Amino acid sequence: MNPAERARSPLPAAPVRRRVAALAAGHSCVDVYQGAVAALVPFLVSERAYGYAAASGIVLAASLLSSVVQPLFGMLTDRRPMPWLIPLATAAAGLGIALVGLDAGYAATVAAVGLSGLGVAAYHPAAARMVRTAAGGGGHAAMSWFALGGNIGFACAPLLVVGALALPGSAGWWLLALPAVLGALLNRPSAPAGAVAPPVTAPRDAAAAAPAENRRAFLRLCLVVIVRSVVFTGLSTFVALYVRERGGGETTGAVALFALFAGSAAGTLLGARLAGRWDRVTAVRRAYAASVPAVAGILFLPLPLVPVCAALAAAALYVPFSLQVTLGQDYLPTRIGTASGVTLGLTVSVGGLASPLIGAAADAASLRAALLPLAVLPVLAWALARRLPEPGAAERPV
Image (cartoon, rainbow, N blue to C red; front, side, top):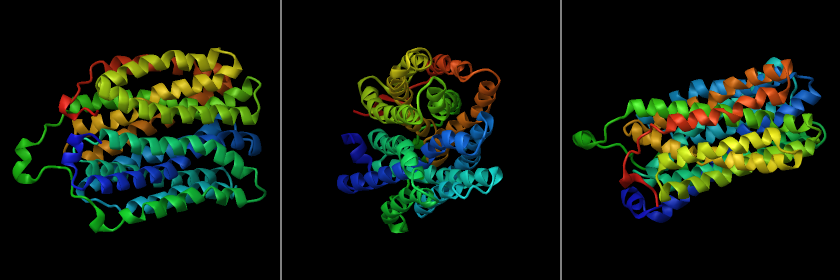
């Protein structure tokens, strides 16, 4: 946290660090379940005989519910902070994935994944708002650590799923619920109302001094995040299957998916450093330009290089991640929860809407042909990001 952010924080530096660390760890536990949905796709295809389109519909169930509900939770947290929602949402995310193991039919599987998606949707706006509130008006460094926690959860999900499903019977499925228990316990100190820092928004008598909203820039930012979401969700859903289609084994596919998620963690930390060196918008724009050859490498380079390209592509796609969250919060400074819910939820989850289309194209042609547009879409994100304004040099992290 830079000195300006520390000065604006309502809490001393040590409690801020502890709170952000707890929320980052809890974020890791929650995003295990977002990563687990993609990691379960190869299992559902091989063990339950789902086609590509049906399996990607599972991803759609989680994404669609999150996209509808998460901004609503953001609006609620703008009206009244609800820190108790964080451990409750964490528990729901884990329970939903565990219930997939009951194998009660396709509809029940969709419902279970939907419950997990609801928990993820409820968690993110409340937690992101709490990070911003604890860190003060800027909070870019704090948000990058919070985002890193989620990236670590994503990265661990494929290995956790492979290890858990190797256990006999239903034991592995209930093992998948353990991160939710840990996450709920980690965030339990945040639950009491007295532990909540006061809102960042200005009081009524100072409303005239509050920064004005920039809705046009926020809408353009949403388009950028949507494009990024389509690319990353498409890769995370199908990269393991693509490796298998090219002759790699199940373990090789899990390694490629792990590399994709691990690269996202590196990209998140790199984004905070690049934004300090340049500014957030410049870092976002250049990252999307760098992602084009990396995504193309996944599709065209030899199989042993696919995990390397996956890591590079994810790093480039995740440099903008936390930066786009704080940009959205700065474009809507009086509605931080809503901005967080949209940038973390609605626009990100829209990427899941494209998964069934990619799956249908793969069923009709080939998976490589279906994934080709993902190498071109970052160009569109780069073009859209060129017109984004930087809210102010005073808000830049160091």
